[in-house]
Amino acid sequence: MLLTGAASGIGAATARILGDAGAHVVGHYRAEVERNGAESALSNVPPERKMLVAGDFIDPSAADRIWDAALAWKQRIDVLVLNAGTLVWGGLDDNEETWQASWAPQLQINAVAPAQMMRAAVKHYKTRRGGIIITISSWNAHRGATNPAQIGYTASKAAVKSAAQTIARGYAKDKVLSYIISPGVVRTRMSLEFAETQGGEEKVTANLAMGEWVPPDEIGYLIAFLATGTVRHLTGATFDVNGASYVR
Image (tube, rainbow, N blue to C red):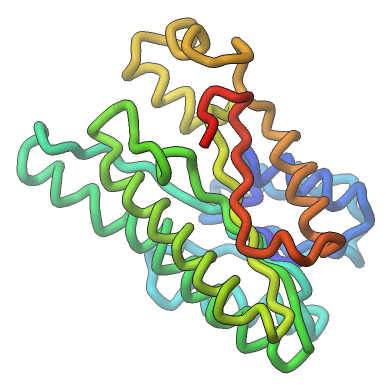
């Protein structure tokens, strides 16, 4: 199993849960400064069941390099979890430099790099008669962002969602299963940064139906379930995890 963005937040919780479940996990982290986070998330996993790989998806060649390194470890990847992402502020009301600078990294890291990994996975899965792709999108991909300075982030998360759905439809007969998870406000660094723009954590929480943020572990447990491939006909489905704050 290859898990991107394993050093913190949803990725770290997922790495721990998958490791505890007995999975062989390749944990990706962006840069050396994040290595400790990935190591900590997989600290209870024996050495023969884990591997760490670094790579910054801003580099167009990183996705293929990371995939190739993960594949070389056990000569197979059964599940790809696309969790890594970035948020770069930049809205219509910002200056031209800020606006322009926000788009390229978010599209590259949140959409293009995951799509490149999806491509590698589909090619691999077609030789193995199937496999699983789990993509982390966002509820912003469906409803838009509360803060318009997240417009690039919202667009990139919508793009990766559509890519994952296209793979589900296009390769179902090849037994390639593709699921999308769209979290709401999860207790991560990114959500804390968002809360600061909305008047603080208490104000954000007051607008949530359950009156609480989604724990990262809940996303991790959902990923662990989807990784089993138990219910194949869920392929193409989007799982909203937001405590009924946004119901479609």
